[in-house]
Image 1 (cartoon, helix red, strand yellow):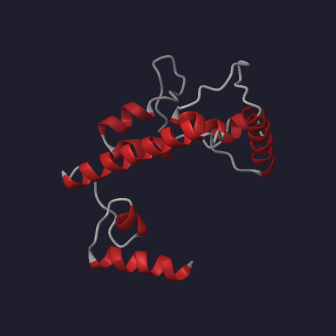
Image 2: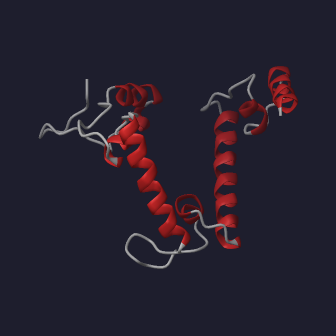
Image 3: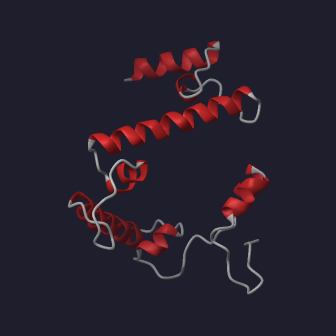
Length: 154
């Protein structure tokens, strides 16, 4: 069942509310999102979940236009890029020293939060995976063997 507002429209930003209640509720809500807006060949339909060839091509073209503007240092509203922000590195592809440092700092904070949550028992460590070994720094035998297997495969 799709979550709706009282007016009957689907609530696209309810994911946060559902995620706060429980991850299971958020996943159930995501499974119920309609996979298409009905109009194919648009970036909007791709973002709604459609993966037909027309929607993929439209998304790719829109992304290429957006990245070309970003590389020129122009935002959507014609302003200069705000350097030193993690989103400038991620969204605009800026690789200047300030943006790279901000992005690295943001990722380190995310890892630290995830490790603290795992240590407190609020988040499950995915044992037997590279993520468990590298991201959560788990050194159990299962995580060590997964890391070793990944290194051998490279």
